[in-house]
Image: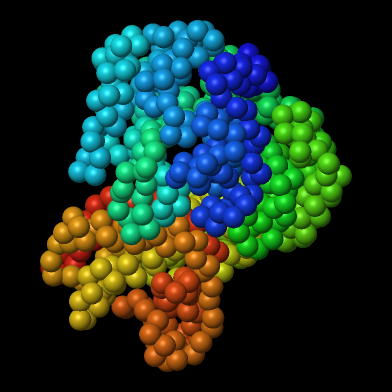
Length: 589
Ligand code: SER
């Protein structure tokens, strides 16, 4: 089945059930400072979910163009896209769980013809803030779902929203398709092993989170559902790679033509370029031109990553123009409002790419000098130091160095690089400005996010613990997977304190605070009240990083430009690591 058929069938089904088809909102939200891009169909509807009257009534349906920036570093596998389309149907204080779940099931099994035996569902297991969703479980059983395929899961799996610091939210019930893979032992829907593919989410938005973090019942009970077009089309066509579906494949095909290489041989760079070009074209079409701030900054990062990965595929000629036309051909029939600017979108992208090429050229020259020396000395391994210099001075992400090395039949001391990287973060944290502005590699981007999160955590701990001596940092360690922060404290933190710290950090992320720095003489910096790392040796001049009004810390960087880039912050563990030293491990999701 084609994406176009899926959209039509969906609209038809819900129109027959009294829904009005509303247009997709733009990707750049109007009057909503809580998000950079529209992340879901419900976001433009927030005022109506909160009780405002919608001019089209209480039952709505649409397909929304969405971008989720948290997913940028995930792109490269078979299922992640930053730009995607979401089908949704809404009840604004009208029908609730019974109709919503019954219609979802009917649509999937009767209209789309999915085998009911390959579906499984989840419901909210309940906690101290909201009750277990027995009602949804009972509805699923009545619809014919066997009990062993109804999973009750905690808040982190089965509670949706709010997207910003406050707003509508509620328990959800997610529908998964079993790909038939054997899966991890004990695998259940939501397990990342790839056995279960999430296709539809039904959120029962009867709560509102207040800016203080409390949960209140809304005056009306809403339904918000979201079905990913790309994923569902992949499932319907028995594909386990969304880059093969008709709204993505033409971009991949065009890249194959431009590079003369096969997608199947090296899918990762093809996926990254295809995803980023789709997202950049659609974002620019909605007015997000590349820049150093906010949505424009995300577009800039995507363009630069696309250029780097295009080099890996051997594409050196301008390629954005041709790819933009392909992307617009795919989406202009679905979103007619975006067609008008075809020429200028290609032009904006080409100009942006050209500006970046120059820096990249310098890095490539240095790379060739390095391998020239190696070959002269009959060596086969690019040392950790050389790889690190390429990264630090020229902004080369490690995967790029590795890929280029492979082409020359050379290896890279990757473990040594990781070691240097961690050491650098931990000990010298100075002078590591990102040469390429946004940071190119997954490695850089992810660690940079953790670095900024560490500052937020440090400041939040000081607020929550509020001890006379303050919280003294004893160490920190960052990997692309998590952060670790050690500090002096006599007592274990209570669950409430941990929760407060976590909430405080997330609030700062949601406030999307700007991150900036100034260079000051060391004494002036320390006297200004900026936090400093115990045990760090500082030079005469230091950088002082500020995160809005929340944190001020002496540090070499790099950091993200805005806190919204961090996603969601979660404390995973708090423990003692020696006398008077506590350790917090946390992740960004
Ligand atoms: N808001 C929910 C989601 O994005 C359902 O639309 O998954």
